[in-house]
Length: 550
View 1 (spheres, rainbow, N blue to C red):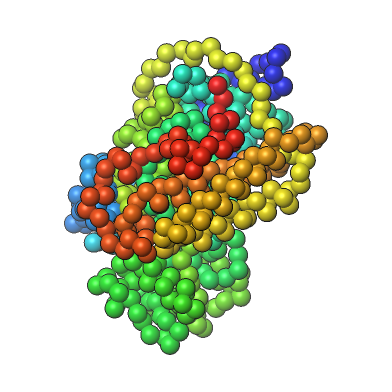
View 2: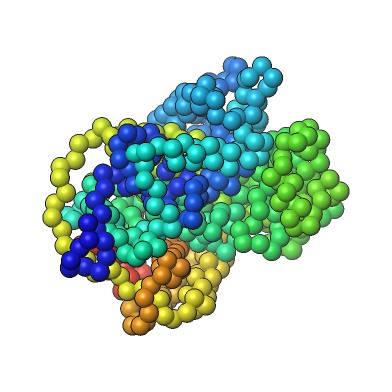
């Protein structure tokens, strides 16, 4: 229906899913035949990082492998912060779900006898990585799910719809405000599922697609949700070292198939760094490369052993190299670390429930405790599958009281008339500040400097937003403004959490606190925060107060 008192349309929905990656589509499909409205800011299905995932799905489905072994590897990689019960749940449910998908005929790579072809990746004790399309697992899988989603009559997909803020009443989520091609829409709904992916786009150098700007984390933060482990950002060791945004990823499966890292002299250096060499945990490999790159020493990945071992197994990698004029058959490829995956996020329980009634989260935007301080390779797609399905079951089974009455708010003032160049400049500066101050290796001095700069940039953006622009917003201007707003908030949250953790653990490396502190393990005081903590530490900013719909 159309409101007669507000300049936008009001639509009632049973369930809103925000995000069109693997987690969001899994949840929407599993909710059928319940009516679902899926919002995605991308132009079509699928979207998000899932589409670009070259690695596979980790699952204990091979001969002699057990979910308990997979869980043990997950706990070991997480540097002391993994919730062991959640890891057991992930690997148990994951193995069952992957077996069901194999039986359902989804296009996984298989041997002539129909058994799945299994690969091995870093920190796994067995070959348990299931692939589809060689190194195009994400694209193959989510494309197949997108076709199923389009054929599901209970799901209504709204593309180019940018979610701006959650609608709240007395700590309960009542829907969300989004900007669509036709204008502002308030989606009034008792159940909202965030499946918006990660925060890689908040960093200047990332493997994530352009849409990975931390939107769901920012939405939840502004609404007052509990957040955790925000300091733990995984940097992928082997992004192709070329001038591109995002930077192309050279999948970890290459190293699992025999690719080796070389220094400038052509010497293999990882055996001196860790007993598992190139298959050491990602944070170890990333820092070993990062130290050399920071010292001006190039690092190369020799793909030729992997290409010889698996002919035709890496079509995506070959295409990416060719796109940048590189021939991996002729020479090793230059690599450097790049922001890749966020272990932190919106705190949820085993069913994806957040601290706010009516709000669920799944996939990379959520913090379930399964990743701890360092995600095990190929557990990300698994997490999306497992918790997307668990969220759907909980949303379908859990009765909620009717929505309380709440005031229909005015849409936020968007900086539509200041020019895209100014907004882009603020956003680009924020990405550079975060990458330099809270990147692969951090210290207190750099983090405090980053906090001051990000606070100033957030205030500058807020002043633009409040200015009278004289122009009507468009999908492009709302998305440009909204993503800049979200990236800056996410950056400030990451820096705040990184300052609070005065130790090195997993993907969080403090040069001024190089050792892990046993007292700073899994304790709520050092893990969980809300937007109130950020405002108290750095001083409130105008944009923090106008954070959600009353």
